[in-house]
Length: 211
Image 1 (cartoon, helix red, strand yellow):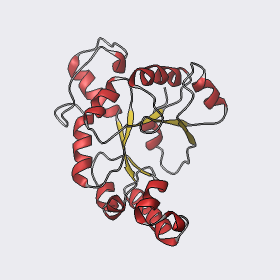
Image 2 (tube, helix red, strand yellow; image 1 turned 90 degrees about the horizontal axis):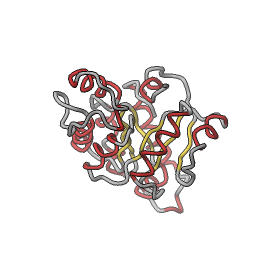
Image 3 (tube, rainbow, N blue to C red; image 1 turned 180 degrees about the vertical axis):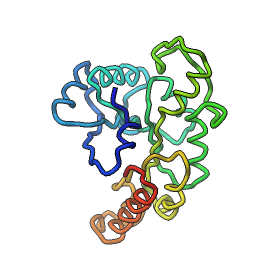
Image 4 (cartoon, helix red, strand yellow; image 1 turned 90 degrees about the vertical axis):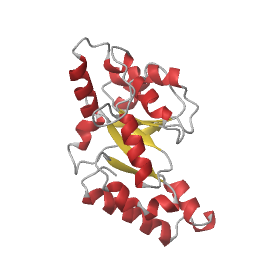
């Protein structure tokens, strides 16, 4: 199956995706695939999609060979390993503002020796594989992709340092929250927010990360 990790490995190719916030029916993966989507962002922060629903929707998308980025519902880092155990292979944390935050998220997303993710195998996320545990640790760590969502003034100030952290695979610009954080809504299309977006894109490009 195509993965977000595969897409990251092909820089320079634009990929088209959509937010999934309403429809979590069994055919949704095939519908979006036929519509031309290359990936889906499953937004747990604003959609009301529960962890139980997430587990099912990931299977629906997998059946259609449509990879997903799962947007975590909050800054609670407990949600990282829990979401990954549901079967997510790419995650995005909201309101990222500092390098320290990113490092904590990355530690929760990967098993030892490079992280601190709680170990659970032969369940949903690894499709109940029976291969040796050391191989599962290695292979699962290699599969996970992490995106930092930049959507505050402080996050924008630190975007270059965030993009340089090893393990950050991409930056996602939360443009509405970012613009709101930078200025009032009456300046929604003003130059300051546009220049901040450009800065974030340059930071990602410099490290050959997705944006």
